[in-house]
Image (cartoon, rainbow, N blue to C red; front, side, top):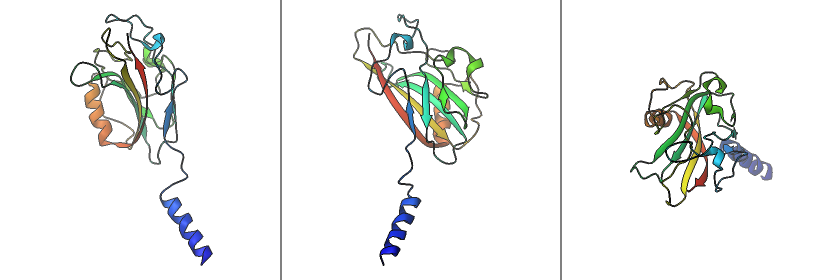
Length: 182
C-alpha cells in the first residue's frame, strides 16, 4: 500500500511539474522594485539619460517555446493607455539574453529579431521619461515565451499590434518592475 501511495504521489508531481524551475527574468543593472539608473533614462523629450537598454537574462522557459518577445511598458504614463517604451519580437528560442545597449544597433539583436515602433515613434528602446514632479512610474520589463517561431509583422508595426499577436501565441510570461521619477 505504501509503495502504491508513493508511486501515485510521484505521478501527480510529474504531471503537474511541481519541481520545475520557474520561468524568470533578471537584470544585472537593477533588481525588481529598484530605481532605474540614468543610463537607462531616455535622452530626449526633456530627459537627459543614456537611453541604453539594460541587460535582460531569462531562464526556464516552458516546454514548447518557439520564440520570445520582450517589452517595456509604463502603465502610469498620463495617456489613458500607458506608454510602450520597447518591443522586440521574433527572438529565437535558443536565446536567453539581450545584452546591455542592444537596442542601439539592430546588428546586435539575435538573428531574425525585430524591434517594433514604440510610443516615441522609434524602433528602439526608449527609456523612462515621466513628467517632471510626477510620482515614481513603474517600468515593467516582460519576457514572453511564445508558441510560434515567427510573428508575421515588421518594424513598422505598433507595439499594441505586436502585443495582440503575442497574446494569441502566449505560453508564459515573466516580468520585473523598476521605477523612475524626475
